Image (cartoon, rainbow over all chains, first blue to last red; front, side, top):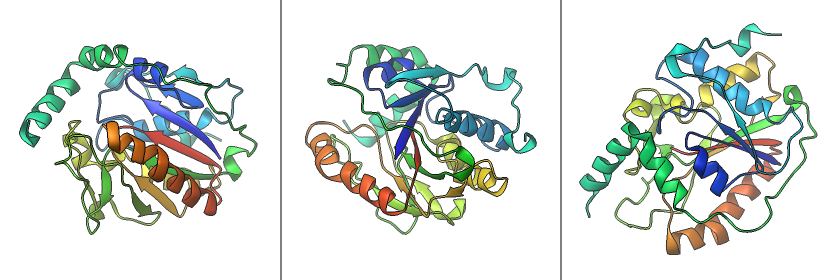
Length: 80
Length: 168
């Protein structure tokens, strides 16, 4: 059973890393995005899951490039 | 300090991210090697579970204990089929106003079900876990000795391949 930790405080991921870590620069309490923003939430969740599909090292952090509402989110349901 | 004070601090921390970064910078790093389990199952065949530390629980379950200054290291099991309307959040240590409007911003179970329906993951695990962050001292020891192993056991029983862990 493999684990990915997604967080919004990068320093916290550095201090207490999980095996796989994903940093998203959002607010506390809105890790996966904005209320009602289904595409944004799906995209962030899928990005966290994608950490299982790529080679990594214990404690490594993937930085997601999003900038809240200023980013364009690709819906994972629309991709094959 | 009372719950109102904690809630006020949470409101401020949510709006001033530098405070959280400064708090984290002052923490000791967790000692020891980071554990590792290889990811052997393709996502489209994997069973996925969510473990949230955002204080999410079923409305019918006991709320997390907000009177204990060390937090509450217990956890709640949340079934795969739950409706968001049946979920509540008890957690004074982050501002969950947004999550109260749409729980998926901290516990995206609906989004996970959509990914499974579309074939992006294999299946949604039958059981997910709600717990809380801000666990200190005696409660931290209980988390490490009792709750975390119990959570791992139940997820393993369900054949979970991958876990997405998220704070509040």
